[in-house]
Length: 189
Image (tube, rainbow, N blue to C red; front, side, top):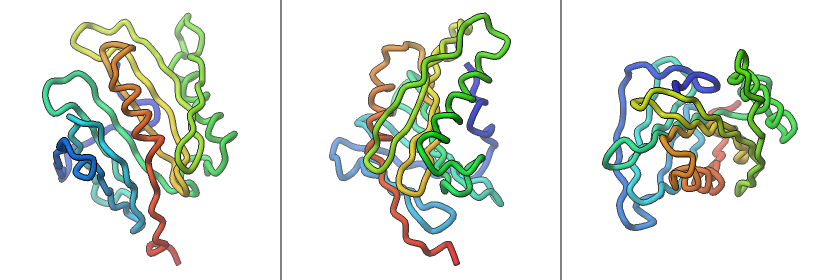
């Protein structure tokens, strides 16, 4: 399954790599955002992250993978809720945006739009869906896509796996649920 519904295509850019370790403190990541705020997430054990920052773009995309192998890919793009498309500032607007993404994904397909599921984060609510694509064996067949309110941020995410029961799905959702927005107010007038 190709990434394309909520997150923009990732272009080649200056990429920063950091690696996780067994200690919880070593897995806590702080991602500096373009507006001088920060996003904190604790990576599951055995995961590595990479930040894609596009020159002239007001957002970053965090890419997560297993340290070894190619079992899954996770992408998360934090946006200020006031800058997110459609000005997503409440749970109902967020749910509608995720539902619309699910319907666009299923457009032209005989299958019904996937079920929208709710999740509760540390500082906000989120919604997601699971879609399956009978893709060739060399591509990911399962997509979990959604968004979560985390303080003043909207975390748009995609999880790509070969198996819909992959533990990486639950680990990624738990990581997003524990995400914390550090609003320093430095990038705003």
